[in-house]
Each structure stands twice: as structure tokens, then as C-alpha cells.
Image 1 (tube, rainbow, N blue to C red):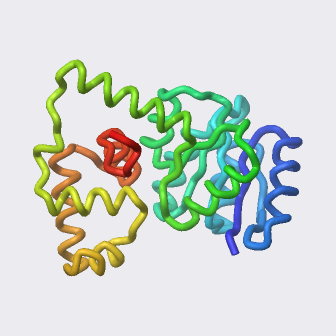
Image 2: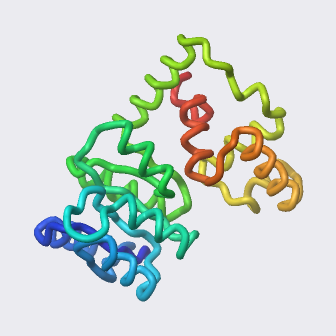
Length: 217
């Protein structure tokens, strides 16, 4: 069962999401909050698997600030950002804050349910429009002749990076590559050091921009 906390300043939106999610056999809304500070308190109390976080909440703490604080307090919590903004700036900021994914409020119900299941499984989720924008930015950078930092990584480090971005745990990566978990952690540390990245979401963002997830680059 996926226990979900809803954080959105619109009561009607929370009510609609609750009805939709509670009708799914594997999902349950365990709590609601109308702004970031309340969301943090309830997350610490209820220990949800997934937090659906509205990006823009004018009263109290906004979604990005709440996400940043929650990831410090609960590093393993999975946060799915809900936004009306189809803008790469908001996407990058959400990923940098530690969100596991980002979905538009206008997305179909099936896409939302799939996104929740993905982040609950430890995978990253980006809505198609966001992925397209990341690809466009990557192509623009290539045209400007930016140095390809992928050349800094060994073949094994690239393998580990790709599997991390696909949502595999260290244990699963170790099993697939037939190496120890400690070796996986060493490779991950070296990748982050070479690329000057600090969080798993940043690794995912980098892998997407480099086309490592099979999006056609």
C-alpha cells in the first residue's frame, strides 16, 4: 500500500485527488496539508511513502522550500511535485530541491497514478513536456560546443550512473553488474565528485540531459 500525503493550498484540489487516489486499490491518502510548514509537520508524524507537493502555495511555506527541508529531515521520502508551470526553470529547481518527479496539474489521471507508482518505487518521473525541454536544452548546449563531461567518466561509472538514473537501488546495481554494494557506492561517489553533483535527483537530471535513459539522443 502506498501511503500518500497531499500538500496543496486548494481544498477542492485535495478533495478531488483524495477521491481519485483512495479509489485505487494500492493507494491511500493518509493526510492533507494546505501549505509547506503544515506539510512538513504531518510528514514527520505520518511517515508517508509519497508526498504530492503543490509547487505554488502563496500562504506559508512554498513547495520548493518545503521539499528542500523535508529531504533534509526525511532523506528517503519520495516527493512528487504538482505544478501548472510547464517551464524548465521550475523543473530544475524542483529536482535540485530533491523532488523525485514533477507532473503537470493538467495531466490525465492515468499519468498521475503512474507517476505516483514510479516515485514510490524509488524511480524518477518527469512529464513528457519536461523531458522534451531537457532534451532541447541538451541539444542547445551541444551546438554551443560545451565540453562533454561524460568523457570524465569510465565505462563502469557510466553504467552505474545509468542504472542509478533508472531507479535501481545500490543492491540491484551490484547484482546486475556482479560487483559488491561497496564498489557501487565507490563508483557513485566518484561520479558525483567528477560531475560536481551532490544529490541523486541531480544525477538523474544529468543522465536525462545526456540521453542515458534512451530518450532518443
